[in-house]
Length: 405
Image (tube, rainbow, N blue to C red):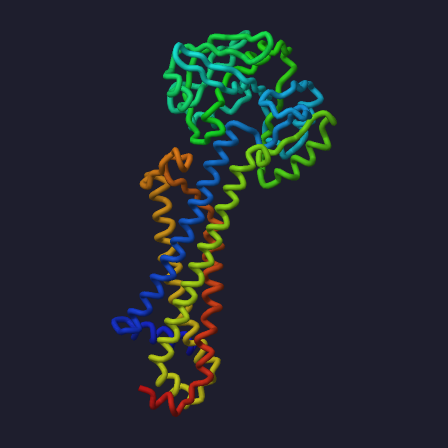
C-alpha cells in the first residue's frame, strides 16, 4: 500500500464538515472558477478573431496580386490573367483557390442623395456560399449573364442612407474621362459590421468593370489568392513574389488591413495578463490552503516524525492532498467553462452591439489543444507552488509538534 496516498486520502475524508473542509472547497472553487474563466477567455478570443478574419477574407484574399504601381488609388492598373499566370498559381500546393477582381470608384445617385462608393467586380469563381452568411436580405448578384450583369449587392449602411431596397434600381456614375453611367438593380443587401467594407464597397460583375474600362476578357485589376494554411502567409507571399513577373506585386491581407490585424494582436496581450493574474491568485490560494492544513495537522506531523517517518514521506502526504484539490478544481473548471461556451455557441445567449463589436453576439470557438494546454499549465504551475508550503515541514520539531494545540 502507498502510505502517503492512504494518509492523504484519510485526511481529505476527515476534513469534510470541518473548518479545513470549508477551506478545501474554497480552494477547489478558486481553481475551478479561474480555469473556467481562462477557457472562456480563450474561446471568446479565438471566436472573435475568427469572425473578424472571416469577414475580411470574404472581401479579400489572403494574398492580393496586382500591378506594381506607386498610385494609392482604389483602382488598380490592369494585369493579364493568361495561361502562364494561372499555371504558376495552380502548381503551388499552398494555394486552395484564386479569383480575379477589379475595383472602380463611382457615385450612386438617387433623386435626393449622392453617395461615393467603390464597386468591386468579381466573377463566378467568387465564393458566394461563404459570403452568404453576411447577406441580410435578397441574394447575391447573378454573374452568369451573357454580356455583363447589372445586378449588385450593397451594404445595409449604404442602402439605408440612399433609402434603397431589394429590387430597386439606382444610377451609378463612374469617375473617369469621359464619365459613364449605368442603371444597376439591387438584388442583395449585406452587413459585415466592418466600416472598411460597409461604408463604400458594393459587389457587382467583373465584366461590367471590363466594359467600362474597355478591357478585354483577359484583363483584371488583380487576383485574390486563398491559402490552405494562413499561418504560412509570409512564406507563401515571399514564394509568389519571386515566382511571378517582375511587374507584379504580392500584397498580404495583414498589410492591407494592418490596423485591424494589429488590433487583433493586442487582444492576445489582454488574455496573457488575465492568465497571469488567475495563475497568481490560484497559486496564492493553494499555498494558503496547504499552510492551514499543515498547521491543523501539526500534531499528526509530530507523531509521524517521532515514529521515524522521514520529511520526504510527510511532504508527499500534503503534496498529494494538494494535487487532489487541484484535480477537483480542474474537473469543475472544465465542466463550467466548456458548458457555458457550448451554451453560448448554440443559443447565442449573450448579445453584442454590432456597431461597436462588429458582430451581434459573443463568438465562441472551441480549440481542444488550447484547453488541454491550459489544464496542463494550471496543473504544472500550481503543482510547483505546493513545494513552497511543504518546505516548512522539515523545520517542525516532533516534541513541540505533539504538544501543539
